[in-house]
Length: 117
Image 1 (cartoon, helix red, strand yellow):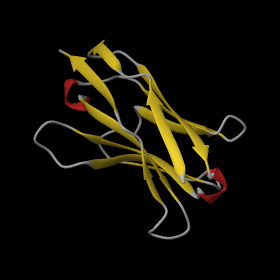
Image 2 (image 1 turned 45 degrees about the vertical axis):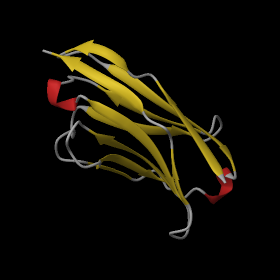
Image 3 (image 1 turned 45 degrees about the horizontal axis):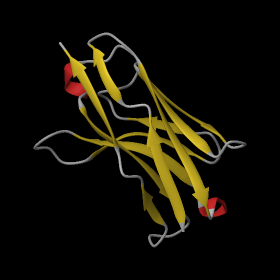
Image 4 (image 1 turned 90 degrees about the vertical axis):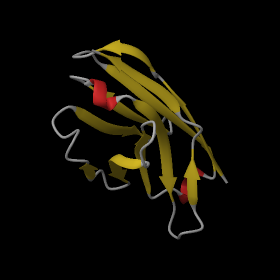
């Protein structure tokens, strides 16, 4: 099992920045990718950013150029640096870790990000 704990959410004004952290513990050797998802009220959960073990990243079009995902393997922590935040970025942000098969699918409990206009 892999446990994921997010932190860093909060209230910020439009144009501001936040950095989310996701600390992983447990069977971290199983992890092949980590990512951030978000779910806004009344909407489906969507992928925001992904980072593979080889360092490759992928971003949703809505956050490209504003958000940066990174990973500190020594600290077993993934980060999401969010700049130029917009009110539409308001959501609960979830950390996700994936292993080599569909049974290796892990989620954090989420952290709330609220961007005021």
